[in-house]
Length: 156
Figure 1 (cartoon, one colour):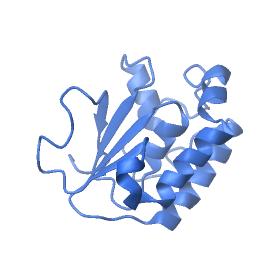
Figure 2 (cartoon, one colour; figure 1 turned 135 degrees about the horizontal axis):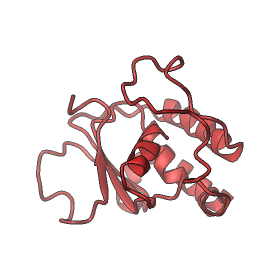
Figure 3 (cartoon, helix red, strand yellow; figure 1 turned 90 degrees about the vertical axis):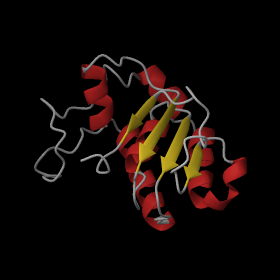
């Protein structure tokens, strides 16, 4: 949620419809958080296939619980290697309102995301999670179809 809060604090006030992550590696945590907070499409862009389905299911289940319980975000002491620091780590209820989370965390939506994590090879049938591996061709994604692009490590 650090990326969401950071974006909000820098003028991006609405949840993006479509996001793309450059180089997520094995963990889809940031993209899964985005899907669980109202984003509808998550594009995974990497040079190699690093999928760890079991790990991502575990992360997903924890994220669902954290969001449903409105748990505070982990601070710098829990993730000392993360360089995106925030002024505070309270749950961002001003961004993730009850109405937004009620719509984003329906059982049907959670099941749909979970199914797409479990079945990445059904890529063409997945409505929410799409993999672009390798992503070295600028024609793989339709122009002006992504609202927000980020990377945790690739562009450092």
